[in-house]
Length: 298
Ligand SMILES: [Zn+2]
Image (tube, rainbow, N blue to C red; front, side, top):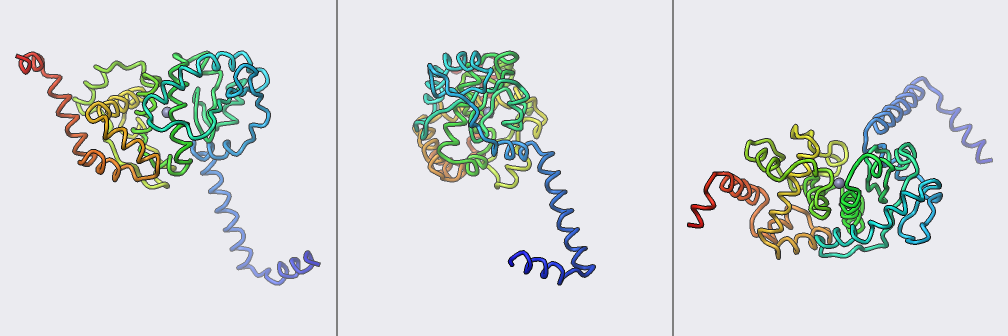
């Protein structure tokens, strides 16, 4: 009966304009689907909808779950997990809100299917480890701590608010926690020299959800290599922490309770982000002048 009514309605509006409108609608949906599929973030969102029901908890540590065939990788991750957790928790005054779970994939291909990304380790809505981390990229413990830092923030803020946090802060925090994972191929001196020469990111206080989703700002936005961007981000977050430990702690709590990053920064430090960045630049330039520290000490 309902089907008959539906058919009559369809048949009752079969004018050429109706068909043109319908075709236009489906064409736009088709184009949007193509765009989303072509965009990394779109692939990540689509992959995050996949079930992880086939992952098996490791007997020795049920926080680590693995795809059939990845038990050896999972055991390796389980050995490193306690230390990596301690590192992530050391820079974040708030504990993990929910249980920690690490999903270890059997192959690079299956990890790409589960995450939509070729990264060796990544947090989408869950933390995934690819065999690529174990085979290609070292040090594994630092990458694990880096991703755990992301998971810790994600558990507090959820995917949308987490996305709005500035990339330089999220990555700088994760690098600080880990001791340097993505940025480990760069030295502090190289990263600082590049900042002094003007080859650096400029910290923003976060952007709206659409801008953050469709054009997240990472190294390439400032024509920086990814390791350089990550290392510089870590050094600036480290400066934020060292220059005022109490303010940094309050900032961390406040943003994970949902306060906007720029507002929280100004409230806790008593000055805005661009002023603190200028101070950081002055500090770097001062330290780069040969003999300055000795003269000041004398
Ligand atoms: Zn990261």
